[in-house]
Length: 341
Image 1 (cartoon, rainbow, N blue to C red):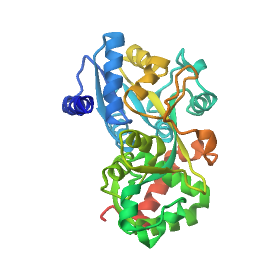
Image 2: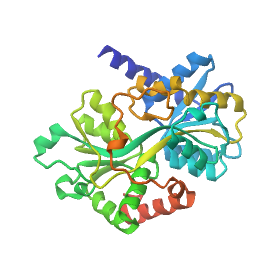
Image 3: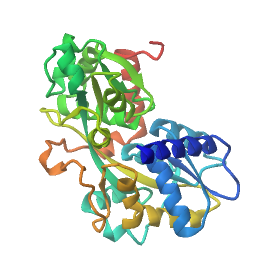
Image 4: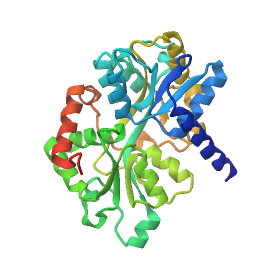
């Protein structure tokens, strides 16, 4: 209990510091993973290198928007974490600096394939499967059946009881949108999401927020990456984690150097650390359960076994395209959930 309180207090202090402007004499990093992992990575890197860094946590869509806005005078040096298709969009817009880390040959094949797909501008650091989790205690009290499939979530019995991310800001939610298009076809996917929208109480900015709410009992069902639900379950939450019966998609989280950085060598050193077994171990140390990309890194005990999950052959090239992302988001706003709602 004391350790948990100390961690929460540490995160609060870290977030307060992150709210300040980026310092000119430090390596400036935008972080797309959970706040606890952002803080743990910052502490590990500073201890390892004696280099001070500024680490600011934002949702993936917000990071992409900031990097686009600052392309002529970047204030950020490194983008660490967040769904890989968004990194690919930035790479295709020439917002990222190519770099081949000395650690690249240690990476698993899926990460090496991702690196090649990015043109050497983004490196895979972890993988995770999409799914949902429900609060078993609430399920019993509300006397509703347990969901096992994507299409179960459109049942009227879940009206107002589901939380999901907003794909305009959340990389997790965009992965869900792209996954459904690949599973069902575009028109059926949007018809499904419109039906699901009737049951969604709120669209959150951050992708992990829905399962955190389900863990607290603030929602019955949260749609997110399964490793985020595992973290909540390990902390004692009464969650049941579901890999949808129809199949599901997955993310490759990535790290990228921002084109135009004035701290290129230090940014490269951070990427090397992020791809090392030591750097990837910070995820487990922060209570995270993604599958690390370095073959020499230890697999967290709670990491979902991706080989046992029915997965789509996720098309990172198509859904990492800025044009395709913009088109799908515009259709989501028009057909499913207008921004004013």
